Amino acid sequence: MKKYTFTEKKDTRSGFGAGMHELGQKNPNVVALCADLVGSLKLEPFIKENPERFVQCGISEANMISVSAGLTIGGKIPFATTFANFATGRVYDQIRQSVAYSGKNVKICASHAGLTLGEDGATHQILEDIGMMKMLPGMTVINPCDYNQTKAATIAIADYEGPVYLRFGRPVIPIFTAADQVFEIGKAWMVSEGTDVSIFATGHMVWEAIQAGEQLEAEGISAEIINIHTIKPLDEEAILKSIAKTRCAVSAEEHNRIGGLGDSIAQVIVKNDLVPQEYVAVDDSFGESGTPAQLMEKYGLTAADIVAAAKRAIAKKK
Amino acid sequence: MEIEQLEKVAAQVRRDIVRMVHGCQSGHPGGSLGCTDLLVALYFERMKLKEEDGKPVFDMDGNGEDLFFLSNGHISPVLYSVLARKGYFPVPELATFRKLNSRLQGHPTPHEHLEGIRIASGSLGQGMSVAIGAALSKKLNKDDSLVYVLMGDGEQQEGQVWEAAMFAPHHKVDNLIAIIDLNGQQIDGPTAKVMDNRDLGAKYEAFGWEVMEVEEGNDMASVVKALYEAKSKAGHAKPIMILLRTGMGYGVDFMMGSHKWHGVAPNDEQLAAALAQLEESMGDY
Ligand SMILES: Cc1ncc(C[n+]2csc(CCOP(=O)(O)OP(=O)(O)O)c2C)c(N)n1
Image (cartoon, rainbow over all chains, first blue to last red; front, top):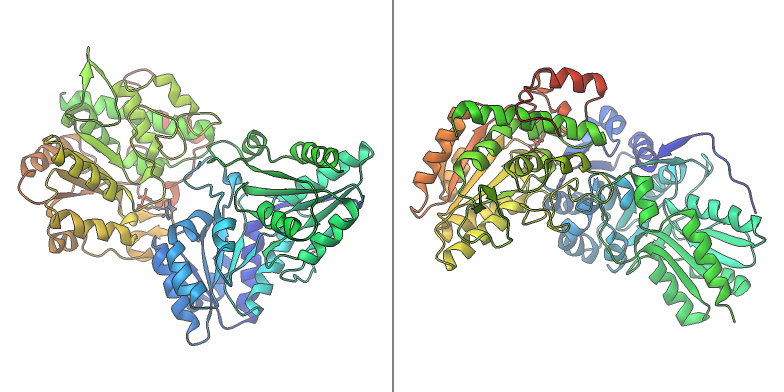
């Protein structure tokens, strides 16, 4: 298995902040909006250099989304930012009508996604956002895996014309992807090649998948690990190529089992090439307060859970 | 209860608040401390609550008793402390705040069946609508008790608040007493700078509310007086709004007056400094 090491841990939201900082310098059409969470979204460097291109919306997310849609008329590229719960569920119809159905070039950038925001608890821990966003026709859905990838994705979506949902998180996690990577929307990233099982992981779960791959290797099992940073459009080709070789799949996401990455992959499998698939995801439940590590363990989102799922998938192979 | 006794309860609740957020190194002390006098006055003096043998008894419907809803759910520490000190659940349970497997979630929820909590809040802007519904339910039940709801001033920026603001006078929800914690602060700074609410009193008046402005929201006697005055205004075809001027972080000198302490926990030294200013009147958990 390809080895991954890290020297530093950072939060993916800081990768977003760094991407915005760079975009502020190179793309004069980029406008940032936020709903009373500037510090949490790491927007200070952007605001410092481009105060006229920052719009403080106050605690009014619905207004922010539709204002963003309006800003595109005239050529601006709005990045509407808040916590993932308030960026999606809270404003679903605004996104649906003003952004997706109207085909507006709005970038919805959401921090504190999933369980790992920790102590704030279930009201803030959205586990349904990938599902809601991917169901919107024309919406691109991206969930990068570390600081560098989040930064690269932030920069890349400014050059893409169309609505995007960019999902990232609060906790510090290892930085293991290249600082100079070019982010290709819709192109899965081969983390490590293998032959016995395909592990498709997104967001914070990619690092867990790498840990799982090493444990499996120690037990003589060769896992192929693929980072699906773009859940929509899904890289079907990469998925099919991998399962053609391994003949079984595991999906891993910090999201509800219903409606997330796993279901997207299952559709590809059912339609094209029937192989067993195991889910590593939250089992149709709300989250709760706790530390990120405690929650990932309680809700079954650790490397050990991926290892167990991989063994189950392998056992089901014909 | 005598004002002096209420003040003693408030001091203990403030101790609980800083200890709870210190214990899990997260949570929102600023707004909690600022609203302590209000919640103590409500639960220990003003509200008519169902009790048996001097102990409060909780049931979800709350028929025949006054109800309180916390719309700005992030100030859960003050609500949890007041509920525990009142006797709704064991005081030692406060130590589990925001920890794994606790009923004291970061934001209040009935999901874990904590006595005293009837609705989840935390996503801002929804509580007043819920309180209106509960007040309508009381009217349908011919139950003449009152419904209280507390919101933040930053929270007023949510559009849903104004849908509710229009609804309540239209439907003559005059058994509703809403309170806004007017501390002038929110996360990104002073409310006037982030998104100016301007004259909230004039706005609610224009929407058809009976508006009361209370300048001393951290003076127990003023708060109690205001709550009785509000009660006397109920039943006159208009919902009642109390604009309660408070100090964020009130009662702990270094937490006062700034949005810095909206959602930050004190370290060990800061905890000691805070506790030195607050009388342990009922015994720490
Ligand atoms: C819908 C929604 N948007 C954003 C947040 C994040 N948030 C939590 S508290 C807060 C500020 C609230 O300000 P205010 O109502 O004045 O309360 P205070 O800071 O005075 O306690 C924000 C933006 C939230 N909880 N809900």
